[in-house]
Length: 392
Image (cartoon, rainbow, N blue to C red; front, side, top):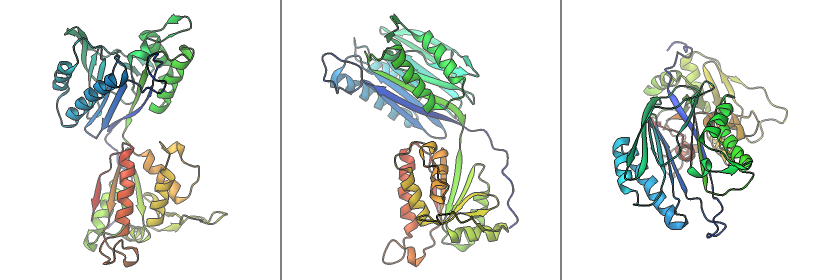
């Protein structure tokens, strides 16, 4: 096998980065700990993204239950491939008569084609290149409700926000401030090139500031940022069949994003087939402490030891929402955790060759590596990552 080839030009796959936050407003007839009546559901694969915001103005557990049932039903249907038009018709028919229950759904197919539904809900905020963009929508009354439907194309760099009615109807600075005031502020905020978490934080802080700290109604904000998808491939462990070694190396080197190898034996296989050198990192002043050292190999972004480093990386990720929340250390486990949290899609290639000293069962047939990887994959999926895994 020849030497590795540099990263090729990648097709631009877009990803919808999303963050949301809800706050329960003051309810004179409810207990102070009453839950927010707004319900949010988000979902993302490579083919589809959606965000759902259902609100209950009825209040109490009954109102919350109705909003939850509506959001859950819409989410389930969209995940099963039902068109948004059909979901809309069913949702509108399911809305309780005479009950004000705003509903907003944004669906994005293939990262670009956006489909929008607003039913008695505040319009979507969309900014692009420092400008406020008004998506084309068709308004129509339906059973006493105002329904807006629209289709439009998203672009890399777009920022979007969905807010509940309570956010729009806040009163502060001795006046009521509405959609246009918020739209102007959102345009200024997104002009800084912020991500979804930063936009969310700014919008929540803006509400508190303008409302003078008085939270009258439930408020919810869903902030979104459109950007290229970040991908990584992690190869750990030799394949059970030696004949597959070369194909796995080719698969790893075809990755357009981050390339990672976890395992000394795995790294030696790759180095041999690529004709590359393996170099040990310089020893830090305090030694390598709890994490084995990294290796350097041309064409691979990160090369680490296997089991110990994988387990420590999982520990580093506890309590961290994104890569910037991790410690600033540069040890192998922290570097691996940072790469995993940075990526949106992480493809694991797990070799099933069994080292008798690292077997999970007495018979020596199940590699301990497989168990550690499955725990790590479970954690990553819980964070909304797309995590395909391939066992060889």
